[in-house]
View 1 (tube, rainbow, N blue to C red):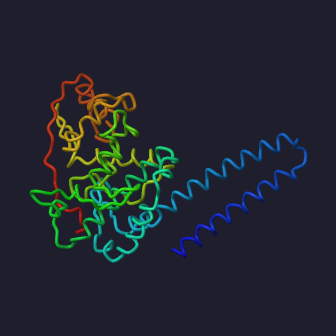
View 2 (cartoon, rainbow, N blue to C red):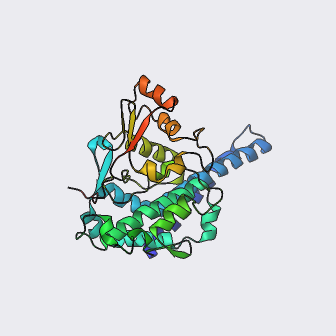
View 3 (cartoon, one colour):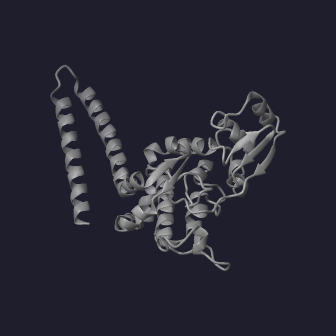
Length: 308
C-alpha cells in the first residue's frame, strides 16, 4: 500500500511540474495577447487533465493488465485465447490486491465516471473475480460448472465486494452491466457479451489486456470481430446461420428491446454489421437482409479454457 501511495504521489508531482512548465512557456511568449494566453492556458489545462484522467484509470487496472498480458495466450489464429491458471495461481497475491483495490471504489466515485469508464471497470471486475473463483479449486476442476451443484450455481456465489455490496457474478453481469433490473439500460451495449469471460472454451476470448474507458469502444469492437470470425463458433453455410448459444440466451440484447444500437434492432442487422468478419458472400448478405435465413444455435463448450 505504501508503495502504491508513493507511485500516485510521484505521478501527481510529475504531472504538476509539466503543467507548470507549459503554462510558464505560454505566459512568457511574446507577441501573444493576454486574452490569447489565457485561452491557450485553458486548453493546456484541459488537455493535461484528460491525460492525467486516462493515466489514473490505467493505474487502477495496471496490475490486472500485467497479469493478463503474461498469462493469456491467443490461439486459433487469434480468434480465441487460453488461460495459464498456473501462472495466475503463482501470482494470486497480486490478483487479490487488484480485487481489493476495486472493492475500495465507492459508489459515489463510480457515479462520477463517464459510462465507458464505468463499463470497463465492471467488465474487468467480472473477469477478475471469475479467475479468482476458478483458482479456489484449480487444478481440480474441468469446468467452472464444477464449482456449483444441482442446487447452487457458481454464478450465484457471493464472492465480489463491489460498490458497497458483496455481489455474485450474475449480479455484476446481468444487473450492473446488462441492466436487466432497469427500465432503461444504462449502457445498452450488446458487445459486452464478447468481453465478459466465463472461463470456458465456448466463451468469447478473455482479452490479453484490461479494459479502459478511453479505449473501450475499440476493444469491444475488436472482441466482437474476433468472436464472429471464429468459424468453430459462428458461421453461415448456405442460407443457415450457425451461431453461438450466446445469441440465443441473450437475444433481447441484440434485438432492440431496450432501444436500437447503431441503427440495429434485429439479430440479422447486428450480424450484417460484421459481415466481413464472418466472411459472408453477397448472396448470404441478401438472405440476411431479406430475413429469410434459418438460424441454428451450436452446442456450448463448458470445458475450462485452460492453456494446454
